[in-house]
Length: 194
Image (cartoon, rainbow, N blue to C red; front, side, top):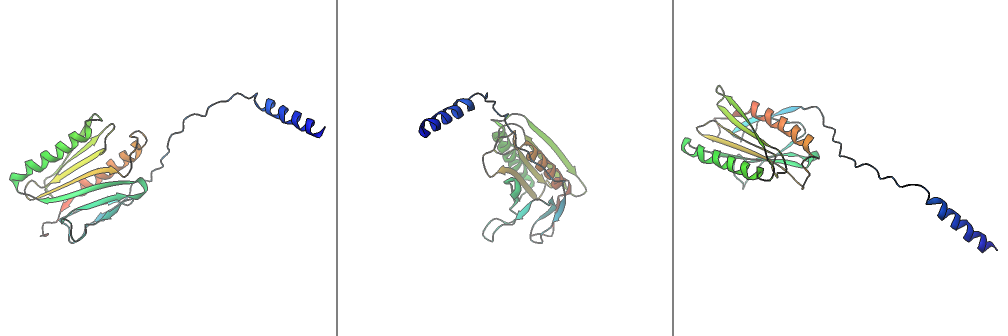
């Protein structure tokens, strides 16, 4: 008898619970709260340049066996990194380095699409720069180069540490583009460097 009552109760619960209509939940989007931009001066004695870097970023200096002037600007909270390289050049080699930067940017934009180009020029400090912001699906959405057109060439490229959906990280990319603008506007050559 108890067994029969238990079976009836289980059947009532099972049939009674199936009356609700299932409503799928809407797709949630990633929310990224970005802090207000703040900067600090990067000016290492052994480096041929100085600039303001984001306070959210860490500067990874090169090891003793790597090329002089190379560094990485790392954003740990965004899983992003700007790989930076530096080269001593001659005016004759400037075009070659500039062409390489444009070629790499073009390759990065082949999947994506539009490339926004921003030019900076500060004749007083001999800083001439180009920033490329690549829209769409690209491994490197931000690229830039800086030169004095005579002796120095500095290049940076942003990469995310993991594969990302471009739309999901758009706010972070835009934030880092702002940081790159600040870097280029405050960039200075240290001519006493050898």
